[in-house]
Image 1 (spheres, rainbow, N blue to C red):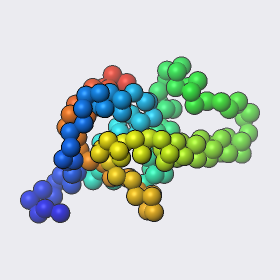
Image 2 (cartoon, helix red, strand yellow):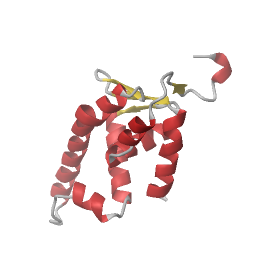
Image 3 (cartoon, helix red, strand yellow):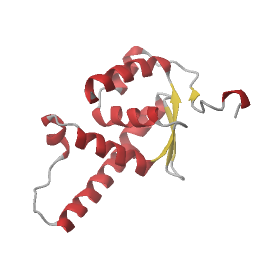
Image 4 (spheres, rainbow, N blue to C red):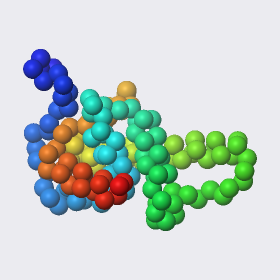
Length: 142
C-alpha cells in the first residue's frame, strides 16, 4: 500500500472497459446492486454474504413491481419460521447467482476480483464505469 494515499485505499484497474461492456454490465439489476454496494465500500472489499445481504436490502427498498415479480415467489403465511426459511433461501439463491453468473462476468471485465477460498470480493475503480454507475444509482435509488 502506498503511504501517500491512505485516505483512498481503492485501487484503479488499468484496463478501461468499452462502452458496450459497461452497458452490458449495468444491464442486470442484481449486478448493478452489487456494483452500487462495492463502489460504496471504503476499501472496495466485501464478503459474498455482505454482498448478497446488500442486494436483498436494495431489492426490498425497490418498490417497483418488476423487482417484486422477479424475486418474490413466496406466499405470506404469517409464520416466522417460514419467513426465516424464505430469507435463508433467498440469501442462498442470490449467493449462488453471484458466484456463478455475476461475479465471473464482472471479474472477466476487470471490474473486480473474487477470491473463492475466502469468499471475498475486491472492487477495482473504473472511472468510465463509475460515471454510468452513479447515474444509474441516482435514477434507480433516488
